[in-house]
Length: 241
Image (cartoon, rainbow, N blue to C red; front, side, top):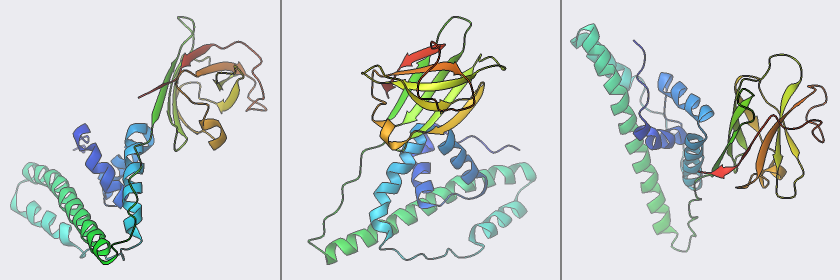
């Protein structure tokens, strides 16, 4: 039976757990896939990592008791039929996540408060705001290529979805055009489907609201190019969400 999808209202807790390195097995794979594919969830993970970072230096790693959850799962399996056992094991995963997360956060908070009391003059760093996510929908002619770009301006991660790009000939190249009107290449993108990219630090400041993203068709050799050689086949404005 397929593992149930993680509900959206569980994302914040899952992001905190992933920052702590708690998820295992299929839950971890689902969380990592969500982190790769969804910039908003990835930003949540980064925010939690930054919140926990000042405390990690004070905590020595302690391994969990071996076989704890496996023994519970085995007991459930032996006490119920296959369908009921499967349902119970799925519930167990969620209970396990909640229990581990609560215990881990409680331990971190306890250590945090202990060090705060022992060091009254210690400066506690404020958590950084959640990473900003920018999006742009690039369109051209009715039957021409179209693209959707999602960019995390703090981490530089970018996801570009492409469709209706000709499968042969020149390759699609993505450009950012800031207020001065000078195009800067972000590199080639996929002809179809999804592509993950990384925006260099010096170029992230160009990804402001109102700036333009555009795609031109260019020779694949020599990319990223210094300047486009043709008119855009699709373009759109950046907006922050």
